Length: 302
Image (cartoon, rainbow, N blue to C red; front, top):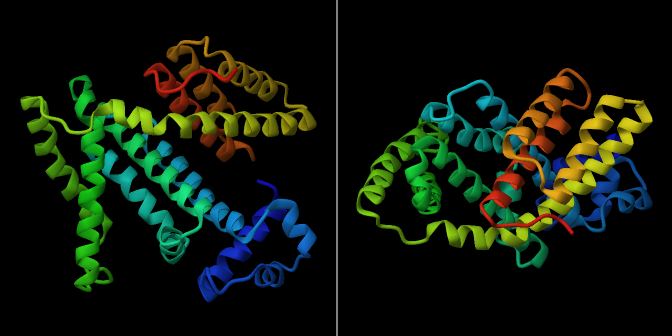
């Protein structure tokens, strides 16, 4: 990310936390960041866009950490799965984002409502994919139901204990998530044994179709941006990797084994460089889009 843009985001985050989302003005952000109005609008069209960039940056951090937790591990390990889920809560707390999330959630702004919807569907989609790995191929028809119920359990338990005032004492997500997964074990076993499901994967695929078409467009732009950086730095290997991935998003010709091999090699090659986090995040999202395309929920970009 551009250093000046990051500077603005971090300054805005501090102001939002101190003054609240509604009370914060663009001028407050300008003062905190020490920039002009023109500089701000070079990067953001509004206060809301700046606010959502803060949350998107946290989301990308969560994705990167989750991916690192799984590297070289047994994908069926429920302890790793629980740690991946907890990672989102840890990132939010480290960045003190809970008040900002609440402001976005209760906003009447259409842009913010759309953001909340996409974040929710993205999390359900990720959970559904991980449940397939944890519980095996026979679980596929029931994973959307399981993902929604897992999120519901965690949200309502957390809300209950927050009302009871235990949040700042002994209770936390490190306890909640493993407990909810243990309860999900029984739920998934019951659904698979009886063939009983309510939602099914078709509904999840339908809901995520539009969002993942948008995701591909964003990935194309980000890949072109990093291609420009590689060309400027004369990174021939990086140019080769990015060119392949751009073509793959357009055509969808490569099989999952080839794509997995390329993204893994790309990440490994730049793992100790300034590009590492950006590449890890991009590769993770490209694999997600490829998996959704394979399941028929999105098509190549024309």
